[in-house]
Image (cartoon, rainbow, N blue to C red; front, side, top):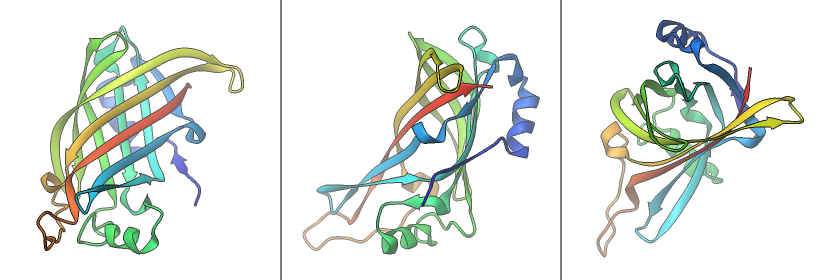
Length: 198
C-alpha cells in the first residue's frame, strides 16, 4: 500500500486564507521522505508501532513571521497500518477510531511560539473521533537547505509527543488476569516531514 499525500484541501485553503498564512513561505510535503507514526503499549510489556498512510497537510512557515505560520494536517483514520490486517480492521472499528463515522483526524494551528533555536511550541485544536481538544506540541524545524533534485529550498519538520487515547473516546480495552490491560492509554506520536518551498 503506497503512501498518499494529497494537495491542499478546500477546508485547509479556507483556514490558511482566513488566518493570512500566505504571508509566510508555503511548503508542500515530500511523501517519500515523510511519515506520521505512533506506538502504544501492548500487554504492558511490548510496543505496537504503526503509521497512517493517507494524509493531507500544508506547512506555512517563517521564523520572522510566526503569527502567520501554520502546521495543519488532515489524517485519514482508515489508513492506519500496523502490519497486521486483523488488528488494523479492529482499529478502524467503533472500538477504536470508528473510521466509517469519523474519517478524519484533524490538527489546526492556533498559535506558534518560539521555544529555542529551531524549536517552536505549536498550539492547536486536535479533533479525533468527534472530540476536539486544544494541545501544545513541540515542533523542531531544520534547515532551510537547498534540495538539488527538487531545485528548491527545503525544511525538515519533526515532532514527538504523547496523547491519552481515552481523552478522545478511543476507549476499548481488556483486563489481564494477572493485572494490567491489553492496550496502553498513552500513545506516542512521531512525525517526521521533509517539505519543499512552493
